[in-house]
Image (cartoon, rainbow, N blue to C red):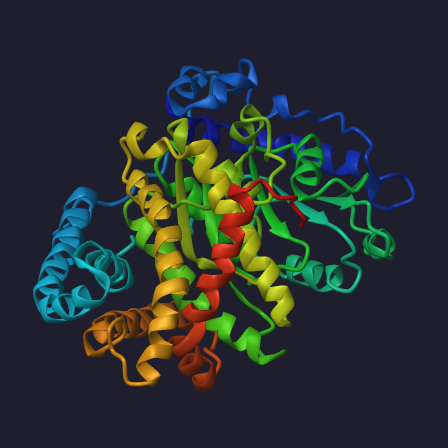
Length: 510
């Protein structure tokens, strides 16, 4: 019996034990409990061997037949689709298209190479053209062709849903947490939901707001301020179910979000340890900076997620909204205390053989930074988080048999591209303004058609998702125009600073 069999086998047991669980979470006065141990322990979900068994899918399968009462349960099977292309075939097609574009661009760039060589020398000219035009063009072609090939199976929603845990780490979120719980209260999830909120030493009225909800299925865990990873790990100790969904304290879930992310989790292959939801911007009307980020989340980040998911290589189960197998997370000792805890955790799961999924219709809306300084700090953290992942798990490039190794290899290259963009391309733009087209000229614009097509294709993909969920795409054409024109010019220097800080071992501040 596989890991998915084990999940399915626990569903009836969850229901029988859940009423007792909720009673344990509700004190006699009807207020939410705070850090009081429940008599329903995690081990009662499905009797298992030591949690280390869940370190990898291969060892987890050895305990798959230890189900309560010896009952057998049906396992969901996807229907085979006609004219289906395998994952490897799609990757080969996408890579072939990208290589063809690369070779064509190289031929077209020969006059440019000749002119630039006279100024910088041949090797420097090749490096400049490769990193500011040819390689970005290759990567854009790969994303575009992959997104076009992406035809995920219809999400099966008619399932037997288990009880789940919802884990939230909160720090000074008194102004946001009520809206988050308003969205939780509107979820159409058929199963029971246990909510664990870890207050990470807030100095505002976060705990008071939480207590005012009087929810019987809410447990408030108070912790000393130690950062998000430590808060999540404190909450993990109180989790009672196999599936735990993590969201940020300011994440606003679409009413179908939990149903859809759990449905994807249950119907994905049995070696799935996590499923990332689709995170979009909820405050895009706050400032012009949030308008720009709206398009980054809506097209840029989501296109990368779709590409990686197509090849079963999703690299980040982000903390803002993702579902995890709690036993697997516990076997990995929880989230590491680093800036990019979600990146490093995800790569650790991949290194041990687990698969990470993505569900584009499971949508959570997050609050994007509203100021230039907030944006700078966030993206610098993300850049440092990627370097943390590369330092700890970069060996995935040569040790993993999954196609996720390709995307980890791309992450090794991205810092070099950002470096060339910040210190070569942007000065080249300044030179072009004065009539010197050594670096930035007409051929450099060959990258732009792919960037524009990616945005247009992703817009159509996302619009289809919004139509399915009865949502409307906000009109933000000014933000789109500026996003296409200067967003990368702003992002690359910020990322370079983040890379440098992490490589130099500078102090980490959240």
